[in-house]
Image (cartoon, rainbow, N blue to C red; front, side, top):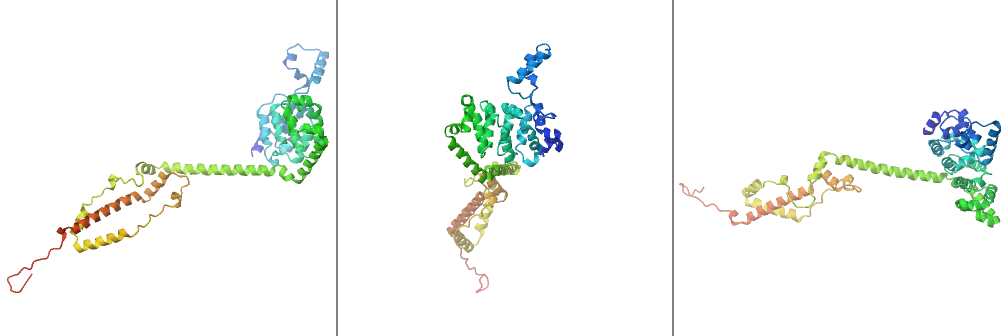
Length: 402
């Protein structure tokens, strides 16, 4: 959709307009021919020629001849966004950038334009992106693009910008022994200049071996060609690009899950109830009694004191038996809370408090019950609680006791 929007905005959605795709995108204006990307022949003299008064026809012809013989033609001033957009579009799938693939034929037919594009920094990156294995260009089209630079590498190799395009052209010609031999011959013709100005190209292309051990170098290129044909699918870079895309997708999915988990925890902590519980809940096992958990045991003591002695003894035996039995383990928290992967322990404790599972409170109440039972047992053993035998009383009637 993004590529289609760019083509529609520049009027390149119709197949009849595909021929002007490259000059139009590079200049971000409607250009009918790729030659329009180059400066006019007489304009390369710069402001020096425009400051003089109008020259005669003979002087104009002399200026044109001198400018054409002074060096290669240069690119016109291009907006920086144009080459950036074109380089990004070359990374899209081939089926969505059909205007670029069709319009490339016009660019490859103009060797002077190719040289000018390779010597300018922003457009040189476009050519490198087009020659890369991950570009939208198929392998035959990349090889055709590399062949189009035949005869220009001698001038591009020593150039500080064009040398990188020459290295990209060399890599794109992998497996083509005859083509690489022609490229090596062009670069070896400017050996001194190349070694002095751009030694990286000399190393990338392995020109020392091509010069010293030519037969061995030719055999090595032939083996590379056989490997290229045998493992064409892997060397194309499609699998590598797919692996990179899959790894990036997995990384994004993990980041999304982490962000969702952090957002969920933040939402729970934003709840006023949970925040209050986290603020006022005491640490587990501190042994400190909270004011709201204090209970008045006077009524319990009163009930135990008024009970019958034998009832007190039975209760004491039951408590002793219950104390001898192993205590049942507390129910575990749900997996979502107990197994909080890297979660907040305070949050888990707060959730247990919300569910009514407060281990500290249960232990405190149990301690109070045990203390009350011990107090009742001590009162049971005192002589005051011993049973008193009632005395028989005699009444007025004989032999009657009540």
